[in-house]
Length: 322
Ligand SMILES: NC(=O)c1ccc[n+]([C@@H]2O[C@H](COP(=O)([O-])OP(=O)(O)OC[C@H]3O[C@@H](n4cnc5c(N)ncnc54)[C@H](OP(=O)(O)O)[C@@H]3O)[C@@H](O)[C@H]2O)c1
Image 1: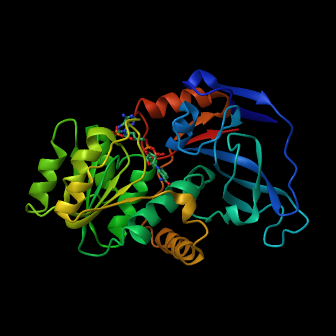
Image 2: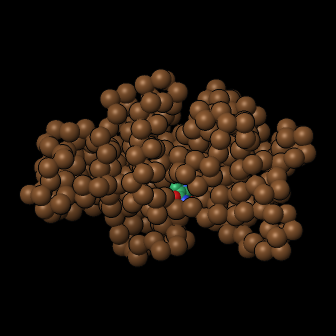
Image 3: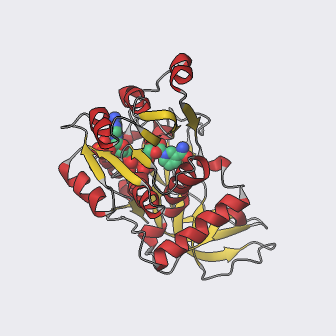
C-alpha cells in the first residue's frame, strides 16, 4: 500500500510516498481502509523536528483518519467490518491504518468522510481547551487566535454554542467573513487592525475571560495582555515556530493564569470525552456545528498540502485522499 514517510526532519521535500506492507491488526486493533487523512499543524511541526516529544525520523506522517473498518483483531467486540469510523492512529497518511479500539469513534452520519477526519484532533481539542480546561460559559468573552483554521473554525462554533461572546483573529478579509458566518461576533483582521486595541474596545477596557493562543512569538505576548484580571490563557501551539518565554512576575502582578494544553492528556478522561461526544452529536443534530473541509489533495501530493497550510492559504480542514 502507499504511505507517506517523513524521511528526515526538514521542509516539504522530506515527504516521500513509498510502497510499504499493509499492516495487520493485533488482537486489540482494527484495520481501517482510509477514506480521508486529516492534516494537522502538528504534522508540520513534527516534520520540521520542532514538536516536543515528537517521533524520530524516518517515520510515517499523520495521526488522524476517517474510513471503513476492513478487519478486526481477535479481542475486538465493539467494531465490525463495514463500520464507518474516525480515528487517531499513527502513519495516518496511508491507504490503510491500524488503530487500537479506544482510538476509534463512530463517524456521525451527518458528516462526510472529509469532515469526519477533522473530529478526532481538531474538534476534541476545541472542546477540551474551551470547556474542559477553559471552563468557558455563557456571558463570558473569549479571544481565539487563528480562528479561520481547522481548529479555529470549530472553536468559534463551540464557544458560540455555549453562549460566549467570540472574538476571533485571522489574516484576510475572506477569512474574517468565514468566521463571522460561523458565529464569531467580532472578527478582527490582524493585518489591518491592532487586535489588542480592538479587544480593549470590545470589552470596555476589561479584557477577556479566556484567550486561546496557538501562534507564539509576539502574538503570545500581546494575547496575554488581552486578559482580564484572573483571566486564563490556554497555549496550544506555536505556528510561528517562535516559542515565547513567560515573565512570571507579569502573571503575579495581573492575576493571570497560563495553562498548557495537549489533547492526548484528555483522551483518557472518560467523563470529559463522553461530554465532548454527546455535545458533538447534539450540535450536529441541531445544525449548530459545521465542519469546514473543502481542501483536498491526493495522498501523493502531501508535500503540496503541507506547503498550502504553511502559506496560510487554508481555511478549515485540509485532507489527503488515498
Ligand atoms: N495542543 C494540542 O493538543 C493541539 C491540537 C490541535 C492543534 N493545535 C495547534 O493549534 C494550532 C492550529 O492548528 P490547525 O491544525 O488547526 O492549523 P490551522 O489553524 O488550520 O493553520 C494554522 C494557522 O495559523 C495561522 N498562523 C499565524 N501565524 C502563522 C505563521 N507564522 N505561520 C503559519 N501559520 C500561522 C494562520 O492563520 P491566519 O492566516 O489567519 O493567521 C494559519 O492558517 C497549531 O498551532 C496547532 O499546533 C494544538
